[in-house]
Image 1 (cartoon, rainbow, N blue to C red):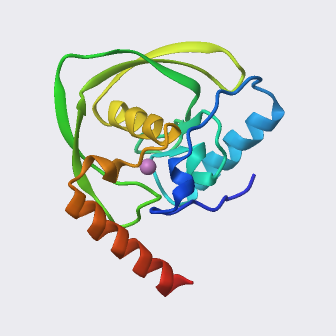
Image 2 (cartoon, rainbow, N blue to C red):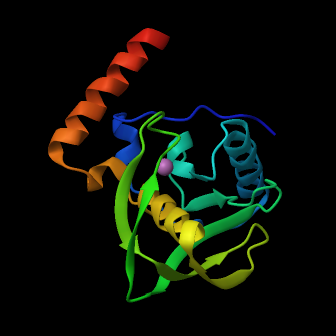
Length: 168
Ligand code: NI
């Protein structure tokens, strides 16, 4: 296992659209394991392969308090959305220190493959539903700050570039 480097907004590579995984093999299981370690190390509750510059449809999530409930989603597809929408404060490992409110469907049903290539369907609400939608956005090249106003996006971009210069 390895801790991978996380791309930081406004890195253009975060806007790459990920492709489907054709075979869930040892290479993908290694990626899943490295992504999980990277997420726990950060620490964060979710990570998309896009964020570690691998442009394949793979997500890891763990919203448990105890950090021992890893959930893996390969080739995730939203089967249905609930009717209600709700606002949650979101953050992202690619946009450190920035938290803001995003409105999304409160409930989603997602179908995906696990790390053994087995298909499953899961209905989620609350934090897990937010996390699934946030990470699936990453696979489409979308970062959560793109839901915010232009002004906020430009402030966040400047702040991140300044942070990059400080840590370079
Ligand atoms: Ni994120």
